[in-house]
Length: 203
Image: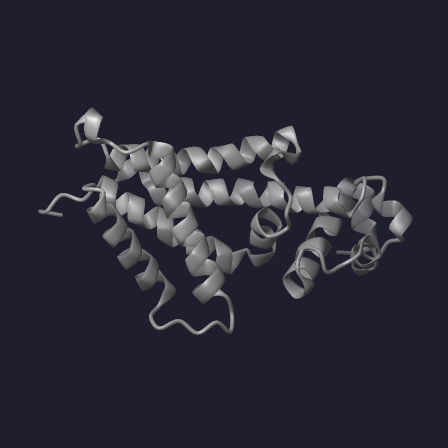
């Protein structure tokens, strides 16, 4: 991005892009605000016109990541079509795809140590992604009697944890998996859901 673009209000996004690239290279705590400024082609002082400090910049990276993540999950869920189980499985695969396609955003969201409650805006977009998973979980459990349904939030949290574990252990570049990460996640989810009685025998 040329400096001419900054006059049109693009400096804030240029700094986000710089931070995302540095996060991919060095991790969310491995770069300085000065490095982000230098990569964007401005002085460190210019950064403070848009961000209070490095953490504030990372929060914006995470916020934008959650916006993309929510869209990715919504598209994968597809209102539960063609079946609740197929759509639920698609959301798990979408988690892996997002981590691969947007590593800087993913690390800012989940590896920076910044809580989603750090700001109202961040909390709002993070909750949207949570709601997609919970809707998918609720639809999957709809055939069970109410007194036999496990808590939606618990099941959703378990699937998130399983997806995150596969990303961290096997979906990162250079990590060797005994099977494709997608296969590991899908089979793991299948075992978990059968154990809870959430998959009918005729699926």
